[in-house]
Image (cartoon, rainbow, N blue to C red):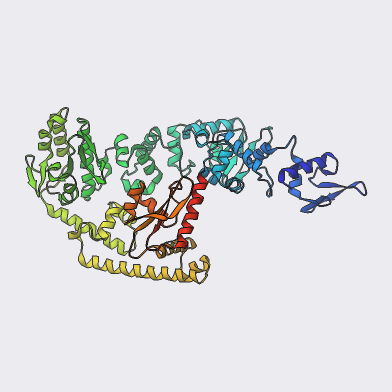
Length: 639
């Protein structure tokens, strides 16, 4: 018997006088032989021969008033007022009705969102319709017709919560949230995944984080950027991981004012460690922490206290300030734009020239010569420097190296007022002292930095941790540890020690991985393997996936075999093409190398791609049939 049929059956027996509930919640069942009602206190209660029901189901059915249909059950399910167990509830009609009910509430109906918020419903939809997409199609709810969530402003959201609290829609009683039902009755709020359903309030679909409701009850509104900043600084403001709608420019300004009042150090690493949400919020709002400081009228030079020690940070500062001066007087240049995988300082839009900004005349240009000259030609690569002789203009190893003042005069036609630009740069240069005459200091800095990186790596620090401690990028850390950059400054003995330690760890890791694979082949459970090798079960699973994928990959020939599927879903197994590598295959099929790599490993990618792709060397008839079956299933699921 379906769940809705059980409810209707029990309500019918109640109308006939066979079933009733006493004032203390006990269930009475009419005995037809004696004509008297008997009290039933068991977990499973028999009503008639062959009809037994759980006590909670009976109490639930008899508590309902008025007609019961799928729509009403969908509402009760959404409001968490269903019994703990409700078997045979999800029929096709119930699933469709529930989807329409959620759609009417304005809830995000994307598959990912529903899986997170209502996993039971998502599983029922897949079970009854095959896929969640088919359910949407059956209900005529297209992706474009779903109600999109409007951007929520946090202050507006909390003020609406505060107004609802003033109107008595929810309150705290004995440390618990109580809510007002549509009938006006006040009941304890049901908590589901730290959220509480408030029946008469519709801002985010009806469910609200418990901590947010308690905050509104404890700290009275109305709210604005200033008191929000104070609550944030004191750690009273309940922010979820996404922090939707909280970080606005006005809110950032209010928080910065609070931090200035309390004498907080705005050095990037200090803010990142102490207030990571602030660092991330500013970077999202303004593009980078640097840009945020400039927009919030904080002098970046005063913030970056490491200028005198870390020449890299000073170089970034010079680069940004020079660009800011140029940008205000010229529209001919782009700054730090990527051209065919090359990161440029300045790019002349019309002349297609690279202008690389350097701090000092002594700064090496070897990297620029190897990076840009092969791509653009030496005549289109120019290195300009700020600190050094202002009349310097020479060609070094085919690349022109020139003072920025000389360069601006030569290209005066590209500036609205080139004299003003020169004056601003000279003023900036005078205000920011920099030692240009001693390249030994630069070499000493690089010696110290590379040694520091290697020593931290020997201590077992991760690349990201080293990058945070040394103030260089994680990519740069990797290049130093691989000997790809700053090689002349690396201590050879220390580097040799690191390489030996790295090889030792790699050998130990390979032995461990082979042991994991051996245990797996013998039929050991993941938990038992994890205990043996002292890893988490998830880590063991990841290792097995990598190891088993490697076994399927060819050791020598890496050519790729491609079969095409026609519009009727048919494939000619005798007609195929062979490509020498994954990149050439990707170019021919018009997809990315990443997609080809996923397909070769048997991971679903681009379901609408009408090709079956395998390594030529590891090709077998059995593997071909498996991939054909997998691909045809993917294509059918799209129809």
